[in-house]
Image (cartoon, rainbow, N blue to C red):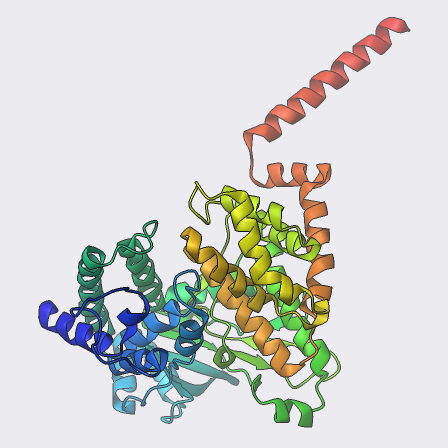
Length: 463
């Protein structure tokens, strides 16, 4: 069964011509004889035809700008989760199966018409105790489909590695396992609920983002109930203008949300595409966002946080030599890379963009240019950094769509400067050590106490 599924997957993907982009020379097994006109589009079409698992994998692959071209990344970014809705009778049966008697509290007022129908789940609206809520129900048979397709993909990765020796620093099996983990986590709605609650707590007391409340009594592995939000899709610019929202402030608040999540909270919503982000209607002069679907969230190691901050500083100062040293030290490129060679490539790929006024520079585009230049040095990023870049590109792109003059840098630079100052001040260091319950905290405080005791003893003797 796995073998026949693999054959179908292989021929669908091969016939798109995608291997022609990666494999040089004559290879009739993987490459098509006839040259395809638009390989990126053909590959996207093939992915869509293989079903929801591959749509999700294609969306995740679109973030791997360290592995694929910008053209392919942009084409895969167009993959949509919208699917034909499943019958309401299945939704009803699943609610009864997952929630037992509590399902009646939902079924009494549920709207049989879905609000949304995606590749992994379907969403319906209902009322409970005077509140408007939504219930998210998992589609049928997903675990079997995913297990079948992931096993086929793992086998394909082993076969491809036999015939294709590119990207020597990359373990294809490890990449597939990362994707498998992400998809399996999406199938457990309890993880999404926990991520939403954590984000809610992080933004308590702030005004830029509202996270819908999660109702734990209705939440299981395959059902999730949250507060219904009446927002405007951020792609609906005409509606935003009609409501009189301050679009400049709205776009800038999106950048502030991103920076807070990445640097202050170190926990970010990693699936912030337009279908998951809405603008609130009730504060037109001080607008804010609703965000839904917290299945994919990310966090960075502290070293990657610092690296990101230093990278922004180096770009602002056009210090490409330090930037090259930074990437070599971070192991983004192979260790025998010469700093001067990497510096020249980085300068060639970025300097033209940096010649523009800062307000016109797209940071996401700048990063993609950096990655393009570094591919010849066997560029490889860990999964959390990839998710971060994807999130940044979405946030900046949405912000520019809302307000074309959005200046990412004018918001990011003072924020990064403040973060670095607080992080590396004496006060910030002690706060960090205390929060981590680090052994160094004990050693430092003990040394201070010993010094104070000796100082006091000396004063007594003098008196």
